[in-house]
Image (cartoon, rainbow, N blue to C red):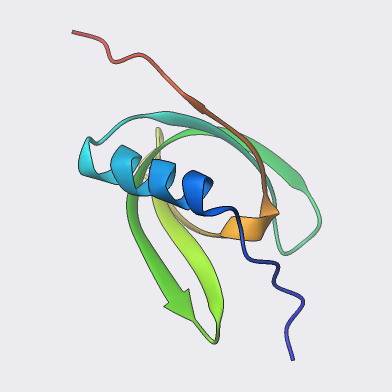
Length: 82
């Protein structure tokens, strides 16, 4: 059994659009370690594993993160440069 709590469909759709348009996001999320992370990222994929949903992202340092969607506390779409 998992403690995953499904997210709102409108929020999920917003993440899908951000992936399609390669929009940069400022994400705040709680990691598996309980630490809160705030990073500017480009979302690259959404996936489901063991009935939990995750977003793969690439941060500005080139690191990838796999974030469980219900652990995202805040997201903000950043304006593109150019």
